[in-house]
Image (cartoon, rainbow, N blue to C red; front, side):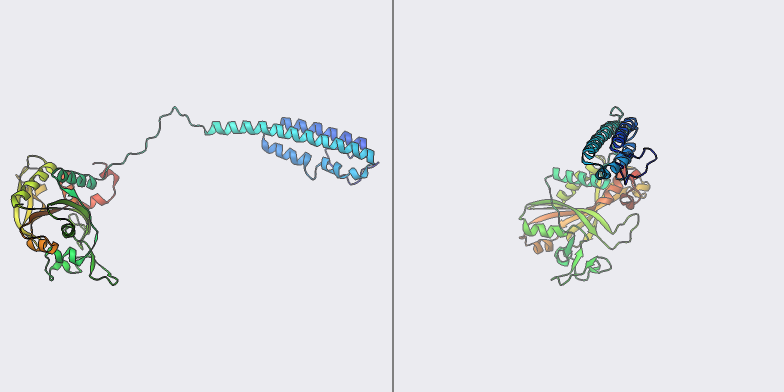
Length: 363
């Protein structure tokens, strides 16, 4: 019986009878198994799968021609076709597993890491110099019995100025000197605090004396930015309130701080000054730690360096906080950037914020 519908193929002869079809299947099975065994890559195996088992393969064509054979011949050819297909599929699958294992091992070897090689250490960071200075200042005052408190950067005009005895016509209340905010219907004007002193009032309102506290925090002023001024800077405030506190206590406390920060051999002196919230008030100076007071570029030839403002708390501030008469206390405040600039002999305050790793690594 002739098997009509067989697609011509240059590699295989066209079977005319069932015997020829079985012989053709045997040839396909043998050649496909041999080609699979010789395949050198999984891609080649997938090509062989299409050639020998695909829809346009000679084996598929024989399967489509089964209806042309008599029933007995159809059974024999169908059985031979199934056996051939199983053999080819198993040969391809077996070789594919072998190749995939080999290729996987090759990839793993190429991607492997030599664990005996020394590791690459990540660059170690360091504490920012301003943070170092702030921590040292806080440690000094905590050692003297002070506690640490923080407060809001956005303040009311009352706490920032009025309660601290600033007169209503003081220049600092001008919008040219202070960052005022849109109040959006607030009961009183809001601003970015110009100093940490508002926390003096807030703490005294909520704490009865005695009160010993330092207050670090961010402050903002409309200053022109240059080597000695910043519009946003860090400050630390100190407040001591108790019975019988004198100006001598203030000077003794600041001497301990100055010697811890700049060296045990320096001297401290205080010049009269004015701050609305202290009376009497003073500018605090230390003898130049670079020339020991003889005069040099660090102290501009004066032998002394100003480091902070201080004074005895003004009675009006106590009254604003609701403290009873007879309570005394002192307050002081300093810029962290200024102390760091002096401590490390830095010529420009902006260097602390330039994020130059070469500069920061020096500390």
